[in-house]
Amino acid sequence: MNLDRLTELRKKKNWSLQYTADLLGIAKSTYAGYESGYRRPSLEALAMLADLFDTTCDELLGREKQKQTAPQAIELATWSSLDFTISVDGQPLSEDEIIQLITFIRTKRKVQEELS
Image (cartoon, rainbow, N blue to C red):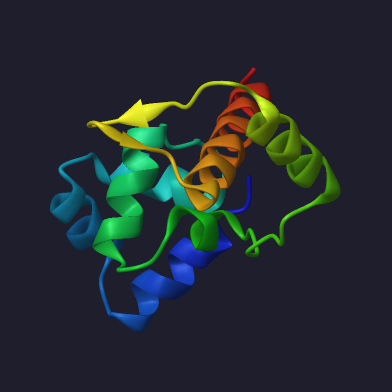
């Protein structure tokens, strides 16, 4: 996990380690551990960091936006041929939402593997 961006974002705001930790409601040593790579933030903490620095988790992790890959296209074609729909809040998922769902599951699995 690459969180080098944390130091850059914090310094851009001219915030100290202590001030940043206080904003997050965590110990200074915990936040310093995130910046140094000694500690890995939980998914919840990662989301809090992204919100604090007005960015995305993907950007904090150094991920670039990925184009739809061939496996997603195949999965989507298979999904489309099924004789049922999945609805959320009474509305069927769109093609874009299905792709987002597949991407979310893959990302979650990858993060879990990295944490293992």
